[in-house]
Image (cartoon, rainbow, N blue to C red; front, side, top):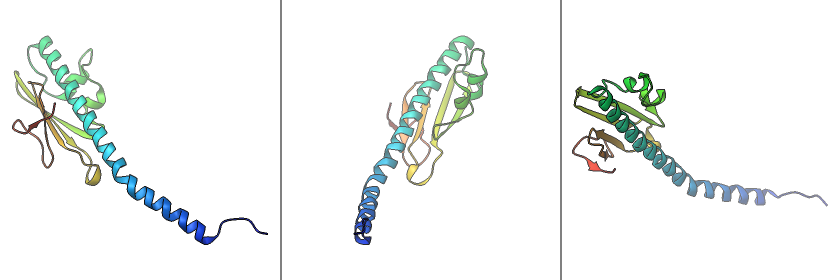
Length: 141
């Protein structure tokens, strides 16, 4: 008597695995997007606090994110100071010594693309789904 699996049994197992993967893949991808968005908002808050501390020390906001990471001691880490962290690109703008804004734009495309975020010196985070966020978009944090 030979022992083993028949072709039919193997096909049933493969079909079950395919159904499970098909059902779970979208929620796993969505979880990653949500995690990246949460990290982006946390990084925006970190940049905001760092800018406020820099302003207290210098009486002006920094000219760039790299100013925050190259200060002695640094206000933020080098990765964030380079503008790309945890799936988001951070674009900093300081038009004058009393104002700044930061955009966090998803570096991913397709299913992993998240929302766009914006924050200014007020510390309010705003979001938009389809294009870079700005001061008139929905408040999220």
